[in-house]
Structure formats: C-alpha cells, structure tokens
Amino acid sequence: MTYSFTVDDLINLLAWVGAFSYLVGYFLLASRKIQVQDTSYMMFNLVGAALLVLNGLYIRDYPTAFLNLAWGGIALIPVFRKS
Image (tube, rainbow, N blue to C red; front, side, top):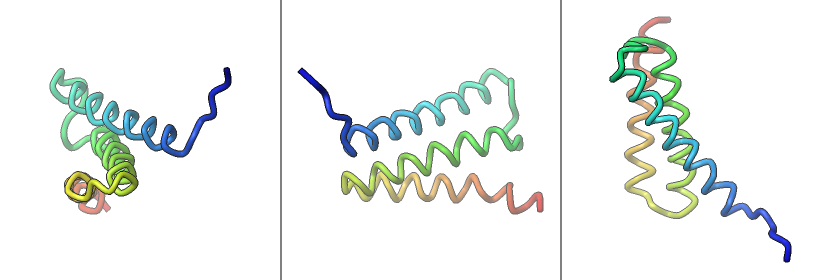
C-alpha cells in the first residue's frame, strides 16, 4: 500500500503550520517572552495569516480568508510604521 502526497495534503499541512504560528506568537506574547511591538510577534502573525489565507482560498472558505487577510494587514502596520 502506497500513499501519494497530494496538493490537498500540502495545503492542509501549511494551514496547520499557520495555525501553529499564530499560537506560538500568542503564547510568547502572553508569557511575556516577546512584546506586541517586536518584529518576531508580527512575523508569527504574518506567517500564520498568509498560510491560513492560502488555505481559506483553496477550500473556498472566503470569510476565513478575509479574516486572516485583515489580520495579516494589521500585523503589517507596525512594520511600515518603523520604516
């Protein structure tokens, strides 16, 4: 019996990485290891948002894709504010 890794599997894996990225960022923030202004926190949010937008679009879950697109956009505000 063989298993073929499909595009669906890849998108699903990336979605899990995105969700994990959100959780790690929030955990580090809540445990005061990082601050909300830290670039690392914004990167956790951007990675999470990008991967979950990809998943939302792929599975045609547009409300979720929109929410994560907005979340990623909000995460970009401090990046542009610093430059």
